[in-house]
Image 1 (cartoon, rainbow over the protein chains, first blue to last red):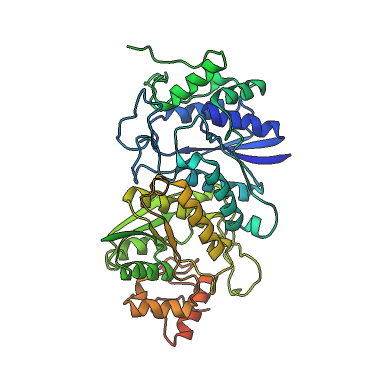
Image 2 (image 1 turned 180 degrees about the horizontal axis):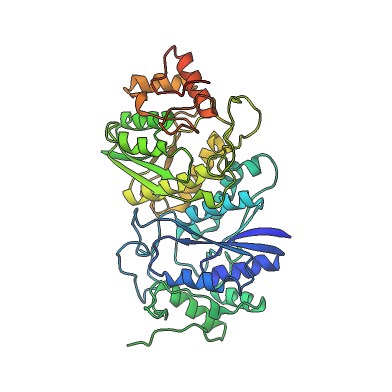
Length: 227
Length: 227
């Protein structure tokens, strides 16, 4: 059975990617990162639900992006609320995050002897991050095939799969539901409260809620009561 | 004064890169990695000598490549000896290592607001690693300029400087000596003994010794007595 490394945060998009990799016939080796993010609950859920999602192997790599700072997700900046449509790249951007995440995925894939890497980036209903764009994914794939012994020696060709790239949030949710994803096992909020309830107001919550609304569905995760 | 991020291992090549970045008028922000490498003494020396080399800021990032395995430098494989000219990519290859290192350098550079990254890879007297080749460096640079807010918003263009790429070990040493590098403050061995003395027989030692020999010089570091 073919193997795939899937970047898996426990969120809606990456969990849909897990299901898509499985539907493509792959055993999923899921990779999560503890990168000093404020929403640690994301990781706890990712670990807890990996088995129920049929993930074959789950690794959590600790990387300390806090020592560089530069993002509301890793430094002491305020997570912006209710401003989904503000122009420009938001303060939740983490410098070079997807580059670092994919680099680790590439290392693990090479050791596993597999050439398929999945990442749940999205270029439509996305937050404007440069490392979520198709041109970034293509450039990383090209670099990966020059960087590694496995590719250079001709054992295979690395492919960075970004199957959600051109889907709306609604289409992502509908795709996942068709594949049997239980979205109550996912978590998206950038700023949950201590109980894990989503804020409903950060970029990530607003996009998620919009997706469920447009699909004519109710998001099964728990939200904080609005004051 | 311009800033540069320099990948700095404490070895001969990266220390020469520090001097070259300084000669280009940059304040050097040096980045080292604790990646489960067997030659921890490399890092201790890097930390100890950073000040004497005029490095403005030195950070050591811990990354655990051991959990992926796949290399004699991070797993329990034997470091090969006396086989400098064996064909193929040696077992000391660490999967995606330079990709991961440059990704962190990119993150830090973006936070520092600088666009110059130095890496001491070499395509002549090198060990055959795919991520030491000019085509890899060019592909990484292209990817970096698509990956980051700073580049996408037009604040600058990232350049991955690999000034040693086309130099022989002899030329690297001669370049460093012209810039005043004290090579007794560097360390290259993959398999030093407990006292820190170099083995003189791994790829890295053999290349270094060849460089000093061809320059008509004696390597100032200490080697183990041969049995």
